[in-house]
Length: 89
Image 1 (tube, rainbow, N blue to C red):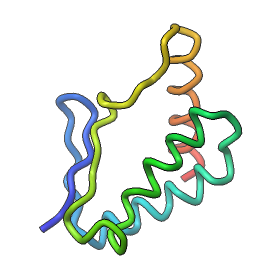
Image 2: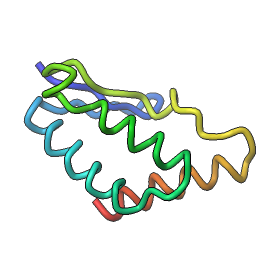
Image 3: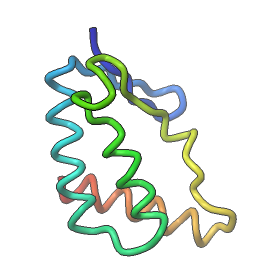
């Protein structure tokens, strides 16, 4: 049993242990960088991936399902934030 994280047609399947590490590392990075409301909503999404709360094998999300913003500027800022989180992680 494991979890799936996706971005449209791309899928990343992780075991439960892999998910725990993935989420912990991303959570540390997002907590360091979050400054704006969208950043904190993304941080909350990551926090909801905690398997000790949600259950093992019961987490995952698709980046395509996120509300990236209404304007091109908002979407660009959100994408930049996610890329900075990944870079720091």
